[in-house]
Image 1 (cartoon, rainbow, N blue to C red):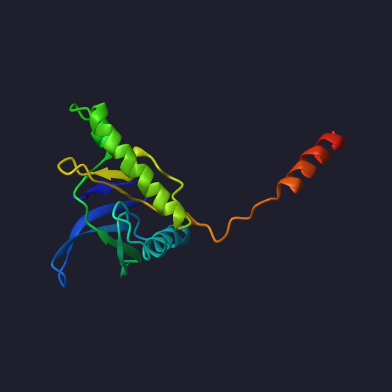
Image 2 (cartoon, helix red, strand yellow):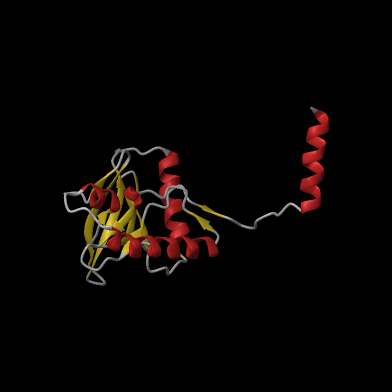
Amino acid sequence: MPLHEGAKTVIYQGNREAEQTSVSVKAFKAEYPALEEIFRLRHEYKILLPFDIEEVVKSLALENYNNGLALVLEYFDGKSLEKVIKSPLKTDLNQFIPIAIQLADTLAALHQNQIIHKDIKPHNILMNSKTGQVKIIDFSISSRLSRERAIPIKSLYFLTNQKKEIY
């Protein structure tokens, strides 16, 4: 039984025999996934590999699976924040503030490492209701910024004035 089913992927819980640990395995639903889908899964693996941020699910391996790939991730026992919000046992404000602080700290750590997630939503945040810990998942469309290019203020002023004169 899958842990989660998306439009193009499915996530299962599995075991790594060598380490005797539980893992999550993200695989394609389609027998023959599109090249773009394979690229996204490989991208997600590579972008997560160098990080050791506690609140980000860790990438463990990228394996050939059927006619595509399978991404092996650390297993985290939690439900999506989307399911937590929709559950009859609603989260009150006192529970929400620590979650918000964890998410803000995690996003700051990602940004310090030049990573932009691009798809932060309750569906991509897992929460363990027993511990209150959260983890961000699904980095398939995230970006790594190489260097930010700043525009000098003088140039920006010149460009805005020049634009006014054109019209």
